[in-house]
Image 1 (cartoon, helix red, strand yellow):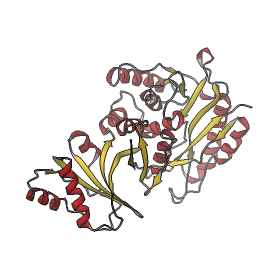
Image 2 (cartoon, rainbow, N blue to C red):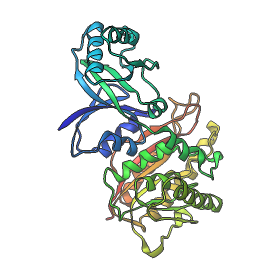
Image 3 (cartoon, rainbow, N blue to C red):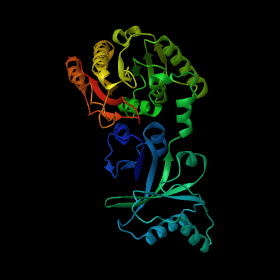
Image 4 (cartoon, rainbow, N blue to C red):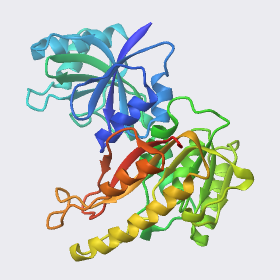
Length: 385
């Protein structure tokens, strides 16, 4: 059997979208809005519960209950919701509306009154018009019924999977070692980057390398996908912290994890034990000063380009043919930072083709509010000459 599902994407929908496409490469997607995308899954695909555990950039997954006429009257929509609650013996429910801010709001209290009049006892859980939070849905047994609208599209749906916000918070804030001064990569972004590299079914014999591992955020997300990992960093304090974080993860989160190795090496001179060859390289190198002055940018980016070029040249010694690389490049983008010129490493990207690195997609920008430096996430395949 097959069913249609709608994915509510997170705060960086473009990155969330390509992550979803990497995990479901054979799916045909329909974009409903900037943050809503739909597809049909069969019994041979992942379940929604499995997908939400894998994905870093999807907040909720809805299953379509019934398509509705695009211009259906609000009374008709209420009737459909009421009939679904009655037919499915729903005890606790909530109503969400997505893509309908410009339309009359559905009053859930009226739905409950109709049900009560018909002798159906239910409990309505109040929340935002856009739906209950993941935290509420994770901790309460509530059926969230959603009315989702887009151009020429209107469906009744129910929430079938939500992000486990507790687990993400643990890995983000509870690990024993962190360095808040270095602009830490959020675990969800790290997971999306890992997923872009490894796809839906990573080979369990493969190895993921982060040659700028810092405190091990990418390594932990690789271990979550059950892949062997190797991390390396020039900062001895950071690598000691990464080892401690991995041990904490083993003791507190999951006892059985793949092999994890952390080295103290310069990424531009990296040598792996036993001539290990790497299938996946996922990393965020040094991005420069977090808040540089505009006049400092030329010298800063010149130094960063030299660092990156040296690293990419050295990585040819450890990458297996066909290896996938997902790497963050710093950028200053005037549309995000008024008063600053746009400065990127596009010239370096073009140079990397001469060393066997082929870009496989356009870059995706991850930008934090108030930040000067944006992250441009590039994907490459390594094909030695």
